[in-house]
Image 1 (spheres, helix red, strand yellow):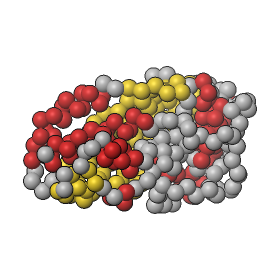
Image 2 (cartoon, one colour):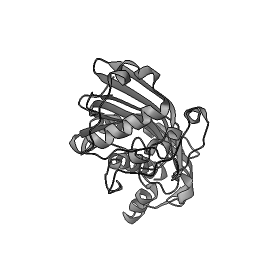
Image 3 (cartoon, one colour):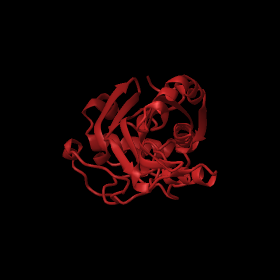
Image 4 (cartoon, helix red, strand yellow):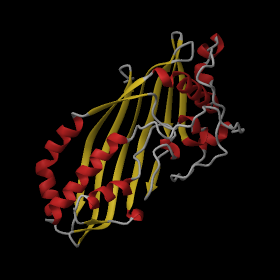
Length: 282
C-alpha cells in the first residue's frame, strides 16, 4: 500500500505545477523604488531562498509608457551592460503584459522513490511512460507574462546578453539557481522573479491529507530546486515583446515523510516547465 500511495503523491506534485502562473500576486502598480546596482554584481555568487531582498530592484517603466530603441542601442546591443539588459526586459515586460497570452507546457523528466525496498521504483518504471504522456499532453494558457518581473534585478541573473536582429533586440537572461523549502511563494527568488515557481507545496500535502490519504510530512521536509532557468525574448523597436520562451527544470523533493504509518526516505519528481509566447524562441 505504501508504494502505491507514494506514487499517488508524485502525481499530486505533477499536477501542482500547472498552477504556477496565477497573476494574483502581481502588484497593483508597476513602479518600484530605484536603487543603484553595479555591473560587477553579475559576477557575484549569491545563495537564494524564497525571501525577497527589497532593496535590489532596478527601474521599472509603467505599462503605458512609450519605449524607443535607438539606432545606437540596436547597433550596440551586444555592448549593453547587464543592468541595461535587465532593465530593458523589465520595461518590455511591463509594456507588453496586458496584450500577451502565454502557453505553458510541462514534461516529466524523472521520478524516484526511496522507500527502503525498491519496490516503488519498480512500479514507477512500468507506469512512468503513461504518466509522462499524460503530463506532456497537458498545456495551459494564461494571460500576461510569467514571473514577478517587477522585482527582477541584476542580482538574480547569472548571465545576461543582448543582440540585434534587424530592428529588434533579442534578450537572453540565464537566472541563478534557486532552492525553496517549506512554504513557497510563486514570484519570489532569483527564478521566481523571472518565471513563476511552484506555489506552497505544503498546501498540496494538506489536500492529500484532507482527501483521506494517510500522508504525513513536515513543511521543512519539502523542497523545490530550480536549475537551467532561462528567459529568451525578442523586443521590437517600440519596446514590445513579440515572442519569447521562459523555461526551467525543477526537482521537487519530499524527505522522511510517512505513508500509512511507514517512512519513505525520499521522493523526487523532476519536471521541465516551458512557457512560450507567439511560438517561442528555439
